[in-house]
Image 1 (tube, protein in one colour):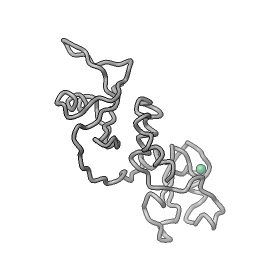
Image 2: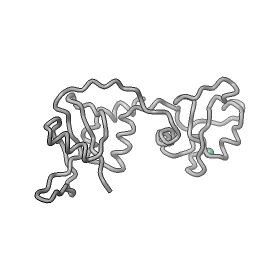
Image 3: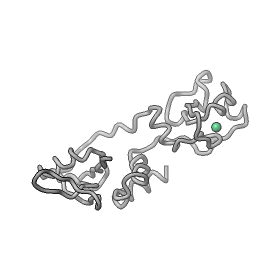
Length: 173
Ligand SMILES: [Zn+2]
């Protein structure tokens, strides 16, 4: 499978994850420098081979307005690590409004949690106090760094040294 490449801004702050082709273009055009490679991989063309980049850094600072992580089903499950936030189950997952919509609960990162079907039905249209249920973790707005760190742990440990500050930030939120 093709590996993804972490892009850091000039100040070393992670700003994007790109396909390797895009990273190679940035490197060949000297718009970025290679900081780290995937050691056992290489990129071959007809005439030569290149180291396979894992982390690159832009040569010029890029101002990017940060819009936050998109709130959707996949990202919500990812934030909650694919576990029901009431019982920890990983099966039949759905989305639960902590404060029900009928009671004015919003569709937001801090009012939505991953829940299994059973807990979702059990809780129904009531509040946590009414049903005596508890959340395992307080729902939070995830940062890009949080997602990067959890991706890196599974797929790209080469990124981890470059995510130190990012991980500290996500663990304190
Ligand atoms: Zn559950």
